[in-house]
Length: 313
Image (cartoon, rainbow, N blue to C red; front, side):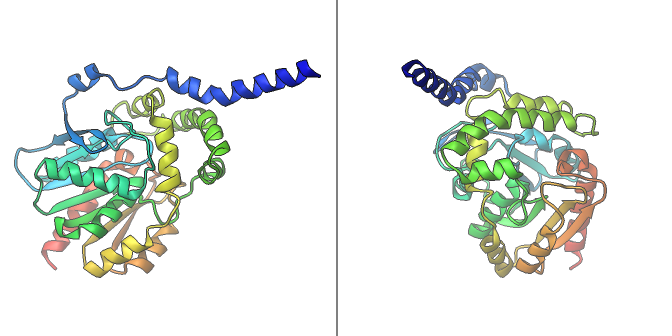
């Protein structure tokens, strides 16, 4: 019996340590990688933030905030279209993604809005900005706009989280169960994410190699725990208060949805209408959750139409 108990205890110990072992096998972002990037870095309070400025040397700024799992490369197709419209496009990697720092801590909306505020302050971007938020970035953009609408000209929300986000049963359970949920997420998420990426590999994309960018994140140390923390502390709560504050302040809002989006279903539109009746909403037929890179031209065309209509209001 002692041997049986000892063997069971050993199995439990190995299982408990396995997520940490797998994490240690992942590679941290290296100094060489940061030296080789075509972007820059700002020393924000929780570590380095990687950013790039794309488009013409002069023009109004669009600031793009990416989502939960894919870093700022998700905007490479859309940024080309926005640049042709005369915008300078600032893209950056949220903490825990891309080439930015991987700090520990609760990844709340405040955690991310502080990063954005410090980035804009360091770059001295004080003019009125167009803020684009995709998926979880839509929740971050809404939180930022509710706090600092005076810095913004408008916000554009692409399949925004914070209204009717569908996490999936396993992710939802892991987010609600610290401890055991952490173990389950660290063991199950990488495989599930790879499967989801492969399932969409054949979908046309305006970002070359988007699947490789997405799978590459899974090899990075700090990425999986960052995704879990964001699920737990940013995506678990509705953004009603922020959107009602935006409505009260009168900041123009354009929300664009994918009709086939399974992660942010169209029923979210009715919630946004309830919270902000002045928000303009558009639906792209045939688009799923990846609409910023699968339907970048259509997204840019809707933004252009919004700007043209704004001029005539």
